[in-house]
Structure formats: C-alpha cells, structure tokens
Image (cartoon, rainbow, N blue to C red; front, side, top):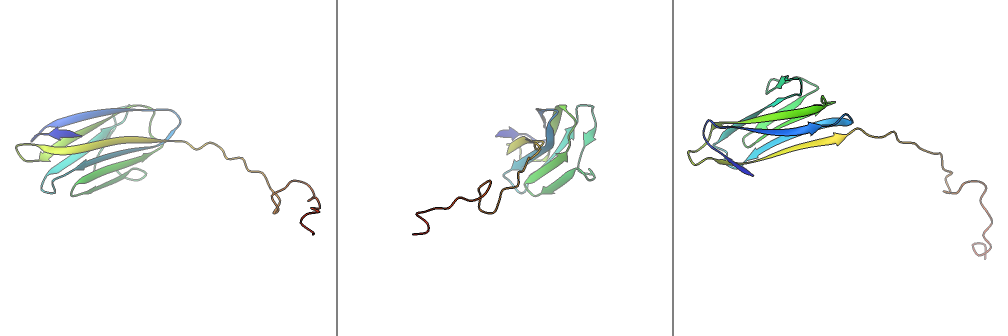
Length: 128
C-alpha cells in the first residue's frame, strides 16, 4: 500500500522471464472521487497505455486500472502511476504485478475405463 499526492508519479518495476506467458498489472485505490492512471513500459521502451489494442487487455473503472499482456517481452517492465486528481492529503493505493509461466506440455496416457492396465484379474472376494 502506498500514498500518492496530487500530480505525483510513482514508478514500479518487475522482471519478466523468458517462460512467462502473461503479465498482469493491477492498480486499486480507495476514494471514488480520486482519479489515478497507469502506463506500462516494456523492456524495449514501448509505451502501453489506455489506448492499447488487443492482444493487450486494458480496463478502468472508478477505483481500478488493470492490464493483461499476453506473451510479454522478457526483461524489466516499468509501471508509472499518475495521480490525476486526488485530495491534498493524497490517496491510498495498491499495486500488483503478477506473471504466469507458460504451461508445460501435458503428456496423457490412455487408461482403460476400469483404471487398470492389462486384463482385469478375477477377484474371488468380489464374486462371493
């Protein structure tokens, strides 16, 4: 949790690995009369903002901003949170950066309906 003052800009960093399939950024604040926003910067310097197009997902409501980026560029990502309109005493906020690793290949085996490999054995106790 942090406190942001009027016109202040606060930066946050996270590192994305090569095997990351998804990067999520969430900004939440308390006061519905306040206005905060966030812009992300990729490791190569590309700006991702509210006009982002798919496959980037962006959404904002009265107290939340979030981004979801699929197949993000590996390296250091930066988020800049801006206080567009907050009280003079500031606004409490929370930031979450989260990543999801690429799924490993799932190997499946065909298993007989009875759950046993090979021919089922006779169960003497079952036939009593």
